[in-house]
Image (spheres, helix red, strand yellow):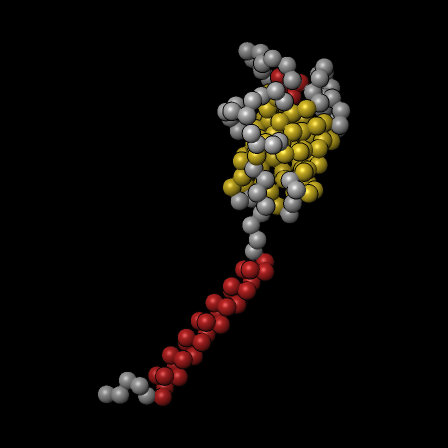
Length: 160
């Protein structure tokens, strides 16, 4: 028996060439079109353009973001919270096309920068941000019960 006849060699040659061409096509497509999102996890100083209604002072907050690909978990903390604060992540969202969308609940004491009472009421919050440059962001904060969104800028905090 001759295993190396012309039909067998042609079949295996075409099969191997087809696999190589398919692999090269998929590789070129992936390199050109599939990009990981930029890393944005970390702490950001949020500076609101105006104070929240019914709050004496609420102009600066801290947003702590943890990222896994395009999925985000975040916490809004008071500006004076130290870096080691282990706050439960109360916001969840997604990062697509340089746009972050987060939603969840945040305590009124954090938003108004006041000491936390025993029964801190939670507000539904939506945050929409646009990545501008070098992780600097602009966006708007929508709080349930406040008719218009509050604009803010977010600047990364320096790691100590």
